[in-house]
Structures are given as structure tokens and as C-alpha cells.
Length: 393
Ligand SMILES: Cc1cc2nc3c(=O)[nH]c(=O)nc-3n(C[C@H](O)[C@H](O)[C@H](O)COP(=O)(O)OP(=O)(O)OC[C@H]3O[C@@H](n4cnc5c(N)ncnc54)[C@H](O)[C@@H]3O)c2cc1C
Image (cartoon, rainbow, N blue to C red; front, side, top):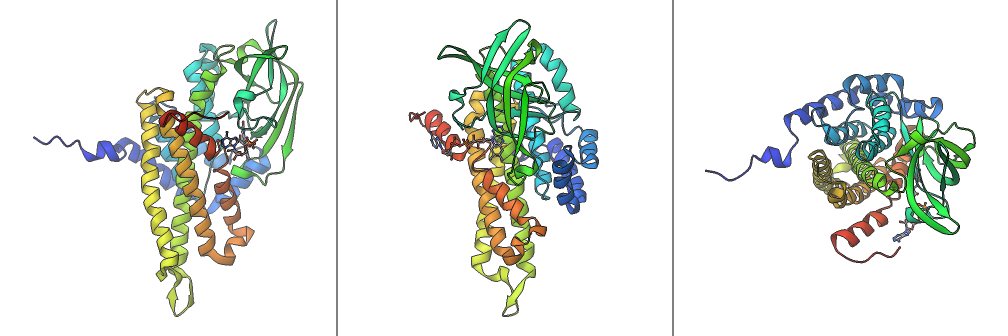
């Protein structure tokens, strides 16, 4: 009797996930010639490209959250988003909405689950995240946004920067805390309406990184109703951890897809372009070896992304998957950047012609090293939790 488990179950997608991926790849290839139009539509009209998004909704591709395994779960979300990124269509808003939906699913309350999860799953709304602040940056433990308890709800005061997609979202998850004098109490997360009185939204010119508009969010004593609370008052970190795991896994999926797109595009170019000696540039190992190395990294990184997503789907605790999620994010962000960098090299001067899209691709790939979590902070997590090295905060 062989003790070897079927290789497919360990190292490949199930037949159901392969079917989801194949259908997403087929549809993404149809939309690929319109990648630029899809990106511009969100920026110019503050909504997802209607035809593309209708296909997402009809296929149930907005409904994948960890553990929803009868639909496909987070692994399905990862393969769908990667399939589109492989065709040059990088969709950032579903990453945020899926990650926040997961946080709501984990920490509740039931009223928030009942209100928001069906809307996200149906693709009717998007959700945004406002954690980062200008003074404390990545160190969310030092957030200064104040959430004050009042009769019937809360009052929020603070400044958040950078916040993505505020022109598109129905609600933004604001991370803040209560203060008593100088003493800070527990963290709290609230779903705030970005159009509420007291909210000032100012666009930051970032050349539409991630294909969305970027903003500063100023909250000037904004009255927020009781039912905006996600999780429990003072328990905001319990909402943040599930959010970050899913955000990291799906960011990594986008990076893998985007790296795949860069490598395949560069290979086509390397086979076609002849500048000297009557041979295509791809015969030179200076061109081909980086592409081969990137292909090897792609195979390994994709496996890790799938494993992290599959573990969350199988019910592993967010804290148990966090090391995989952080490792996947670091490897995928470096991979996306190196792939974009080599693609720019292979395309030569054509890469710098803005009409060809490589400058956006390159800058977005570069951004993935700094956000949504910087690679240093993801490595800090691994140093502290996987290696037991103390972290300096
Ligand atoms: C286009 C864009 C979109 C964004 N969207 C959102 C959003 O929707 N919601 C949101 O909340 N935030 C968002 N951000 C914020 C993003 O997550 C921040 O850029 C990130 O938190 C870094 O914060 P900071 O820019 O203040 O850098 P800092 O925190 O000042 O850090 C600067 C650098 O120092 C490094 N560093 C700092 N401390 C340490 C340490 N202890 N160990 C090692 N390295 C360290 C960091 O890794 C980083 O490389 C967005 C940013 C950008 C650019």
C-alpha cells in the first residue's frame, strides 16, 4: 500500500478551484484588450467598469470569503484576482472589501454581518480601510484618531492618510481609540460613511496608484451611530488581524498575477524583437535568465499564496496563518517588482511610452513593497513570531 497522498490534493488546486480559475482566465482574456479602459473607468467615474463588474457579480466572484468553501472560499478569490492580474487587469477594491467583510464575519456583531456581508457578496458596494495616519504611519498602535462614546453612538475625530477609493466606497472602516486625558484606552473599529457631516475628503495626487484614487480623510467630530461598530468597543485589534491576513493574501495574489503578466509579456517581446545579428533578443542569456529565474520564483510564490488562502478556508485561526500571509506578501511584492523591472528592461524605450501601460505597471509593482503593509513590517512579524526575535516598536 502506498502512503503517498495524491499529489494533486497537496500541490495543486482542486478540480473545483481549477474550474473557477479557468473560467476567470477565459473572461479576463476577453477583457484584456480593454485593461486601460477598465482602469480609467474607475478613476474617472468612481465605479467599477460596469461590464466587467456585471460579469463578476453574475459569476459570484465578489462572494468569496474565507471558509465559504461551498462557493470556493478565499482561495477562489485569490485565483480569480490573480487570473485578471495575469491579463494586466489589477482590481484593488475587491481586496479591501473582501478583507473587511472577513473581519466583520469574524468579529460581528450579527447586525453588521446581516447588513454588510450580503451587499459585499452581491458586489453592490465596496468598503475601504482607514488605518494609517500621517504622524504614526505604519505603527497602528500609535493611532491618534479618537473615538468617543456618546449617547446613541460615537463621535470620531482624527486624520487618516492614505485612504484608498473613498470616492467608490459605501463605508470606510476607521481604526481609532478612546482617550482619557493623555491615557489611551482600547482600539475600536467603526464603519463610517465618508459622506457624513464633519468628514472632509481630499484627494492626494498619487497618479492613481493601484488603479484607484487616493485620499486624506479628515474626521471632525463626526457623529457615528451605534450600529457602525465592528466587533466590540475596545476590541478593534480583533477586527484588524483578520483583515490584515486576508488583505496580505489577496495582495500577494495580485502581485503573483501581475508578475506573471510582466514575465509573459516580456517573453513575447524577447521572441519578437530583433535588433542585431538577425536573432531575437531572447537568445541572450542576459535577457532570458532573469525571466527563467522569475518563472521559478512565480511557481514557488503561487504555492505559498494558495496555501495561506486554503488554510484560512480550512478554518485555521487568523493568528496561525499570519506567518504564511506575511511571507507570501513579502515574496510576492519583491517578485512583482523584479518582474516589472525586467519587463521594462526588455521593452526598452517602448516601456517609457505612457500609452503602453508599463509605467503604471512598474509604479504599482513598486508600491506593493511599501503597502498595504511594507515589506519591513511584514518581516518584523516573521522575525518576532516565527523566529522569536524581539521587535522594536
Ligand atoms: C497608494 C497608497 C494607498 C494606500 N492606501 C491605504 C489605505 O487604503 N488605508 C490605509 O490605512 N493606509 C493606506 N496606505 C498607507 C500605507 O499602508 C502606508 O504607506 C504605510 O502604512 C506606510 O506608512 P508611512 O507611509 O507613514 O511610512 P512610515 O510608517 O513612516 O514608514 C517609512 C518606512 O520606514 C519603515 N519602517 C518604519 N518603522 C519600521 C520598523 N519598526 N522596522 C522596520 N522598518 C520600519 C517602513 O517599513 C517604511 O518603509 C496607502 C499608501 C499608499 C502609498
